[in-house]
Length: 298
Image (cartoon, rainbow, N blue to C red; front, side):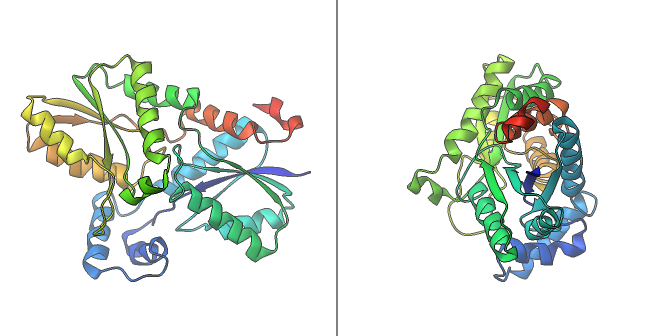
């Protein structure tokens, strides 16, 4: 039986001119206010014109394939290569069993669960009969924690560390979604590994909608730190595994400016990207779903 790993990622435009099309996929075809499209285009221009997410995901896939010894494909939810395009390639290549892994450590039905549904829809649309084995969450995997710690250690010591994850609509809590618990658990485990005492947690990159999003927000935390006389903060995004706009703009530009205006020097550890320790974490997670004759390859 031919097996392969499928990495699923959010996707992002590679140039500012693609932003309007990209946002139409994010919104499921629903129209986006022109002012929001213009603002998002501006943000991509601020980080160099486009997102490095595709390049970083390609590097992660190549490193994971070298580690596992099985083919590793990647597909995007909201940009090219779309999940259906990648699934079509896998079907053409004769892949009969797929271990699917979302490049988001913490599970939510609204985010990772949506990748599950999109992948299944692509499979059905293609009439593809391959078996799919999903890995649901790896938020507390020891090597993920170690990978985040390795990046954080280069920024220590610091008086204050603020861990962040991408915010989601607050309504997810009403259904018992585990995302908030898992995000805070990842932060706590990295903090414990680093021996931190002064650390806190916040949500970042809330959506441009009128509904309530998970908090507290980063800006409110920075305001509190300033009021307490804290002048040095390390902000560590533990909900992301690659460089993209939520890191390169929201953290490196927006939060840096907010902090500087309050007399705070803000630093950020490097993103995981293709960190060897992170790739080993992915390999271990995937190997647990691969057939028994492949498990010795990690």
